[in-house]
Length: 247
Image 1 (cartoon, rainbow, N blue to C red):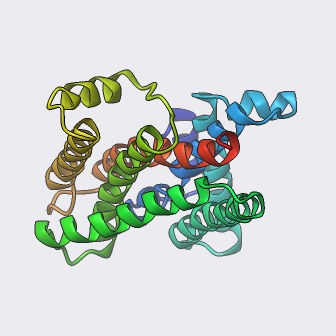
Image 2: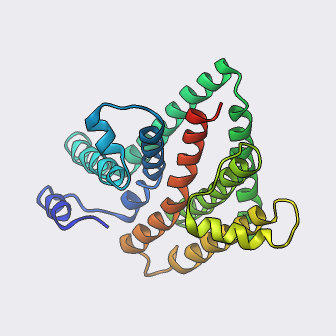
């Protein structure tokens, strides 16, 4: 949620926060995950180390987004939503390209497994979204809803790749508990499969409840963004951390 001081500043600048603007912040949760993973894996200057720690990384990235909104309002009023989403996606794409080139130069298998996780998430999202057949005339809700699903599938996929192929350990107690319960089935990777199903169910439940109803507005968009962000941030965190720490 936007702090009171920020809301007052937006009112003073006469910037109306629309559902599209709120939805456009979604990819920036990935930036948060990347920042936190970098802080964990790399020795940063003290100031950056403090700013990129969790949960400070959320405030750092949120401040950048609000500053971006103020800047765009002065240059091109009303263009905050497209600029914000393009900016967030561009940062993630540049970071992904840089990491991919580094992994390729080192001949690291992490490049392959990260690619597997992303490809699986894209394919599974397309299939599940097609079966779910949730439609709305408003592209904001369609895009955000599918993004929430993708984020949670990607989180499950990266977690699975880390556990099954890269030898990592799940540190989130909730995720670890779900995986442990699933592993009682004594089938190969059954815990990961159960975790994936739970993540998909959570994402679809959030979209069903919040997205696209006649009364949906920026508050519903904000809750949905957060619901997706708690999947996207750890997913990107996993991808970046694997890239920087696994040989």
